[in-house]
Length: 342
Ligand SMILES: Nc1ncnc2c1ncn2[C@@H]1O[C@H](COP(=O)(O)OP(=O)(O)O)[C@@H](O)[C@H]1O
Ligand SMILES: [Mg+2]
Image (cartoon, rainbow, N blue to C red; front, side, top):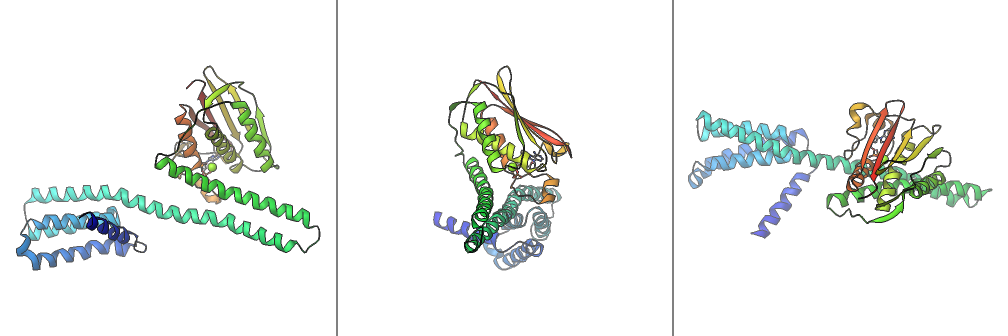
């Protein structure tokens, strides 16, 4: 029995992934199944009796909405109502209950269909994001090989090396985000407890960032002079995420400022830029998984929209707060606070 169920699952999964679902296939399935139910009822009527109509039409609705989403589910419900009307009952109340049941099944299945669709889109998107930096890396690696025979090769090789480094970092960031999100999903995103000075950590991140992006001005103001108890690796991740966002979403000519401040029972870190900014209605959504603002999507800058989701998870775990002040076209300030004692 288990074996049969496993095999059925494999077949169903294959069916769902069978090529891309277009409208003809999505709406074709309920039609085909309706014909199948009619034929089945016609030839096997005596074996199964009247009640099988309900079972068969319910299967029709589940299969159609599971494969095609809400539209095909409702379509299947309508077709099934016709079948029930002609083959089973003309009782109006029974029919209404049946249609309602079909509609509910379709709505519930829609969520699954949406998720599957998003996943497909996401895989395409990730592949695309990984492809661009890889192509650049390959290009510069080839140039480095060719460059061996040319004059002033040292300086050029260094430039190519820097480019290879920057592009590799981009890929690493994407892969790390993906790994983290997978860990969060399966509950394996673990935290350690370290005791460290937040000022030192911020200083270290800023110094490192200045090395990677020497053309950008990053200003560090203030100090907390406080030791906190938290996962140092994860808090570094938060600062790096916010800092790289500030740099990524503001012009090279503009500086980015990090401020450290001590509050009564917490430390406060803010990161400000003079960049794109985020509109009011999008501010509540940027912490959602995969969400990227419209102006950023238009610019085709790289990113998966995972950094802030992960950042928010980390801050929440540490009982801290994260929020934002921003004006489109003027810039954004991201704040996060962490309690001194957890
Ligand atoms: N400093 C910022 N200025 C403007 N928009 C920002 C800033 N930080 C984040 N955003 C917006 O929030 C979205 C989500 O950010 P994030 O989760 O880090 O994903 P990613 O940077 O990979 O797109 C970004 O795509 C961008 O639209
Ligand atoms: Mg980001």
